[in-house]
Image 1 (spheres, rainbow, N blue to C red):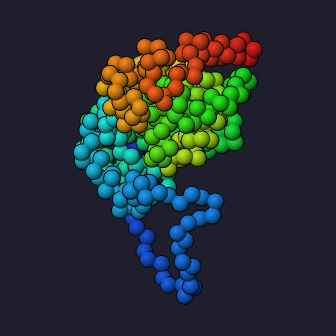
Image 2: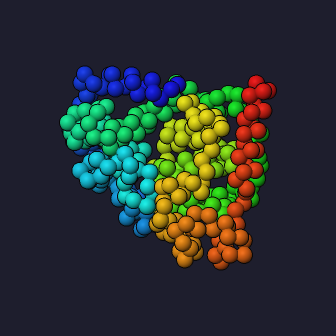
Length: 328
């Protein structure tokens, strides 16, 4: 139930001998059965745009090249680059892992070959990336061991009694990237445009919905799975329940990310914000993180004021969790 203990056990098993990669299977003998043509579209699913095809080219060859490029060029800096959404610091292999195009074992072999076979020492970037691979495995084990999390249930049963708000207008504003909080809005627009969102921003966006808006985390989980090209039931559920403080090994309920401070810390020059929120481009590096600070009259045209007050929403969330502790 706790990642640190899972990680300890996993590393103990991997240290003596790393499991080999499974070799390619032999070609199947011809069956003499006529094959249907491969469809170019599937009923009920949108046809991917050329933009998405370019961002996420299909096939193991592309996945292996992306893995090798990351391991050779960015792995050594991953421990600090991974939190900067304006930098190309992550592997962006999650879509290929989710679809089974490439395996965690292949990723592990690639990183160890660049880290002198070390699992828990050596280059800090390699150690942190191995931890991220283990987080994926941890959430898959949770899914198997506690299948209720795959059925729309909270891992922590007591949190089922949380008084989630029914606020469809605020939910829609969050979904469409118009909350008035630039780091949240930029993240949501990145999701809609690319089918992917930077991991740091997934936590920021999830915590904003579940804590500041006090909207049921399952609404966000559902929205992410609908739009993420790397949508993975175990990882997505685990991340949402971690952010909402309803899951295993989750963030303490009293810890709420402040979107302004997160933005200033991880995108200090507003490069990521300007990429996805062009209406804020003229603002200074300081003002762009909180456009409403100068007053509603000075907001750039087309950008909304904040839909919720951070102080009030924080107090509301803390009260909800504290009352839960008292009643349970």
